[in-house]
Length: 343
View 1 (cartoon, rainbow, N blue to C red):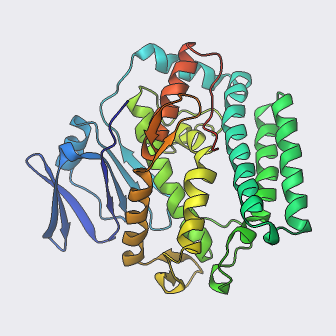
View 2 (tube, one colour; view 1 turned 180 degrees about the vertical axis):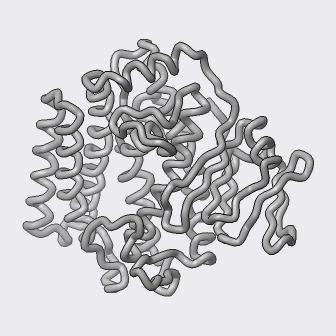
């Protein structure tokens, strides 16, 4: 199994990256503030618009280190990938299946089921640990989510219907999300998903965590020889890592939502850690981003037993493990893609 290395997160929007030999140099106002050897890195994620030098991009490419750029709102902007790995036959199979909507729907179903089953598990765990926090509305939404998942298991839906089902059932899940926030601080109330930009503190944290997962998924897919831009659930769009967005669906509840809930419920982040822009967008402060990323890196180092592989792996390697299983399915080595399901 692959070894988990470090990801360098650049949170200061005024940061510029350059190369010095075999090291990444971090510059703010043309002054060097940090230097990291390239061989220590798994990837680099930049939140901002200053960018990086072509020499640094070439260094990342030659050492197979993914360099991703994300807006301060958490929107994916661009990515410089490493060397293409894997044989061309795997990518040809990926492209052929992606062009066939019927075959795409069969694969997309696994991503959607993985996400919704994990959503259900998040709600089940809460109702078990905090039975007094469960009311009739929570129970009703949980029941509708469970019934929808059961229907989805038994039916083969075309892509458009599958997306519609996923959207509807996700609303039932997020209708319960405010109950999962144990803090009664009104600053962390949640009325539903908002994105591009996020309009409250909870959505700001969700968008931020999802952008981290998407970057990890894109790197994982390239590492096993798949094209992160050619998806099955998410269709082709220039510049969008569609397959990375497919793969991250099953990780949203486990890696994203539970992480955000722990940050809020354990008081790792506070109301003052956010700024509200004139257009209503809510963003983490630079200092708060560092706090969140420290917690994120710590979380990724924890070990779990992978339910399908039946071996202990670090949480940060879950995207790689699932990318590997997806590649095996596309090659025909296993009959279906087994999504990651939290226990």
